[in-house]
Amino acid sequence: MARLIVDTREPAHVHDALTNFGVSYERATLDVADFHIYRDDRLLFTVERKTWSDLEASCVDGRARDQLLRAASNARSHNAQHVVLLEHASVLTDAQLRNCVYGKDNRGLRARSTVDRLVLQHGVGVLRTANVMETARTLQWILEKSIKERWAPEGGQHTCGAYYGGSVQSKKSANDGNPQAAWTRMLQTVRGVSETAAKAIAETYPNAKSIVDAANATDNSKRLLDAIASVQTSKKRKLGKSTAGRVIAALCGPT
Image 1 (tube, rainbow, N blue to C red):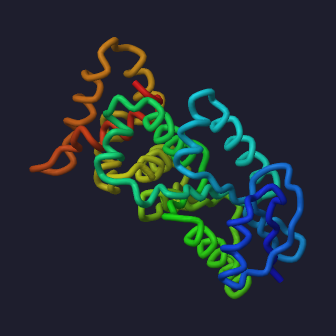
Image 2: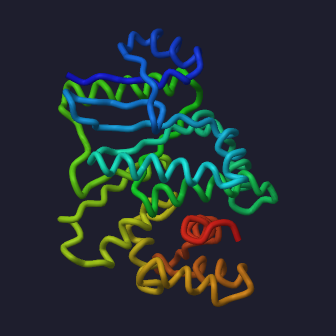
């Protein structure tokens, strides 16, 4: 039997939203994360709820990264999956999202970089929700899947990239001992990077270290952006600056 435990410090409107959807839950003071989902005695998911504005604010002093990575590490120690629900993030406009990568809004850029790192480097599942009601509905959906389909994270496998409207599965058996296969799958968790594009990037930059080294070796961030943007993904298409910027931000942080 699956059960949901909600941290006692969650605000009243979260409890109201869960009640509105008829979600049964227990209250407890949790050391990490805001929600825990169990099946029988096994911890399946630790879930953290953050509004986009809260994430932006906490990224300024580095609290967000430390807090989220601690929660992800705790989940791994229980062979569970850590999930972050980014509330209000799904209603960001295209202009706001572009500003997170290229704009002068340093808080937005840091928040976007933190999210990209969570997905790309640490296998954290990230889901965007429009409001608290959608957050409650998402929790209900995860809980129902855990009950009806005995759905659970598998050892050596995690699903990434839900933040970007899709998912990419990284599985040890799928990599066949090939580090480059794992690298191309990691690249696909960045929004705008298809399998074909990931393979094209990997031909020029065979691992994450090669991009980080390239970033450290140049004093002109635009030069690196142009170099990655010019990667040929087909006979007629290049990767482009928008996607290249997201790849750099995911690996190197704000530039």
